Length: 131
Length: 174
Image 1: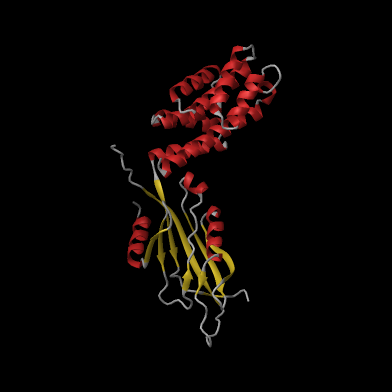
Image 2 (image 1 turned 135 degrees about the vertical axis):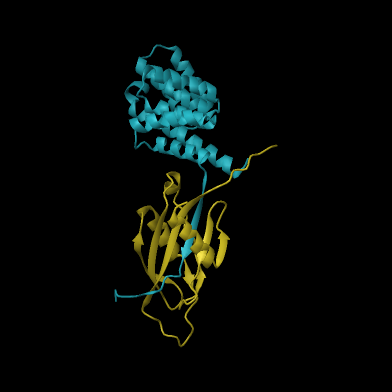
């Protein structure tokens, strides 16, 4: 394991706030900001692109967006990405995600929220059937 | 049947069908034609996913006189057909025959690699895949067989981290 992988793993262990299984195969970790101005309501997990999984490609995409008063994401754009194959699923996931509506009396700020998606592949253990 | 094995089967059929499809498309001048309707119908049956009928008609077509190119395409299709029927040893013998006559037949290498993967003969699959990749590096079927080999020898699970801890940025677009 490389130093960067070790650092990533350590960071993940320190900051994991949610750990869910999205479907049969994909493992999802959600590292949520503790000082966020807007509170996520529904966070959609992108699908790992099959095209990338087939050839064992990993990558990272940062998507920035505005959140409207009623909690919908707006002006979704990729700010940084290591591989284009991951951009569309990341953008789509953000577009389908929602935040809690802004309480009455609170002013809508002009700052963007950013969300980073890290796509990687971890080795799996194979169970040998004995029956 | 488990989800994984069902998915593998679908993938496998997909690859086999695509291989046949490409063969018919590129070699249509010799494979398809009134001179040997059995080979033509056999290829179409395989394309339609009817491996049993496809193999039967192709074997029948081989009994009639046909050009060496037709026979090569037919044997390549038989290799694919027998893979679809999961008769892998028979499939291998047809792929071997194709490659004995034409060592540059990437579809035969690709199909034989697929048969080797199914037989868990991964080293031989790797060798055939390398040859197929050197002959047709962009072929989709070859890429799919490569992924099947990787899934068999180096299985991985997708893992996604959603990180929202980054500080928000000023919206300078407005």
